[in-house]
Image (cartoon, rainbow, N blue to C red; front, side, top):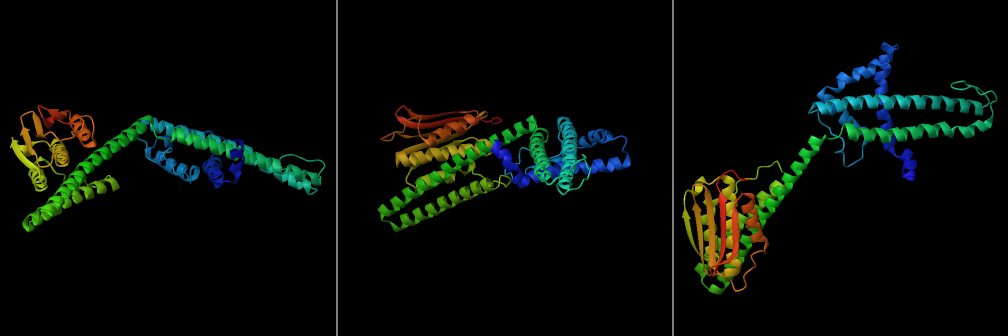
Amino acid sequence: MLRAFAAMPARPVTYSRGLHLCLPLAFVAVWLFIDAERPYVIALFAVPVGLIPAMRLAEGMQARLFLLPHDRDRATIAAAPSASWSDRWRTVLWLEARLALSAVMLAVSVPMILLCADLVAAAGGGTLDALVRIEQPHWWYVVLVPLPVIVVLATLVGLGELVTALAGLLLGPSAAERTKALEQRTEQLLEHNRLARELHDSIGHALTAAVLQAAAARTAGDPQFTARALTAIEETGRAALDDLDRVLRVLRDSEAPGGPRPTLADAPRLFESARSAGARIEDRTTGPVDRVPGPISREGYRILQEALTNVLRHAGPSPTLVRVAVGAERLELDVTNALPELPSPSGGGGGLRGIRERAELLGGYAFTGPADGVWQVRVELPLGEPR
């Protein structure tokens, strides 16, 4: 730590902080020119100035520029107007502390500079009497010249570190602002988690369907079947590319619109894609699907997509019953197919876990696993406001 402190005089930031400490002295000098008998008024004047919301923005930007010019993490000093009375009073304290530290810097540096001038004059054989009177000038006084310089540099480094720490304390984000930033970060992580699930479901389904369709076309030996399979692969690939482009656009720019996402109204297209990949699907839809709230309808589509992807991967051409029932208070999704030869455990698999997570986030219930000799994915979602 002592070595780092000793290296501070060689760093440019030390002198930018010193300039920051000296800036208030310009206002003090103007006031002393106006009224030299009452210098304390400048400290009283800082109170109404600090209560102006824009003053916090100006001080924050100035502190970032001079105190942390090359620091990548400047979040310790906020650059925003005062949002509360707590911010305003902290700005007042900052202005008062800045004036006090500037006065300390002035009180130390000016006498040391004068003393340095006296020592230089004495070393040359004369007297200057700027601060002290040296009765017997001699050349060896030049050896003492570095001492006041060291005192000034040590004061500059110490006050620079102190003013930077105070800036983080008084100009930094308040507890409410830190809580808000943490909430925003949490929401961002949740959104990225949701996008990752969507990407997993969409790309996983598209690749599974494309692989099965290509394999069926290769073994069928029927030009018409091959043409239909290629058309289905093209449509599935285009849908997956649209999903991928939408997700990447949101990840690149969180403010960019996400674009339309498929809902339960698009489920027939999903069923046709699975059928073209070789699945034998019977779908039964009851109730007004178009009246399902948007978030629930979109998540319901993804649940069906992941369930049908599992059917294609593990059940192949076995008969599959898909039931979508929209009631007055809840949405029921049920996908049933024959048990695969090597069934996945009900607690494993990222896709099945994603189905359960989606249902829980919407305040619903999900069951995935064997039941009555078949493999079942059953999800119930309330049609109220999602949690």
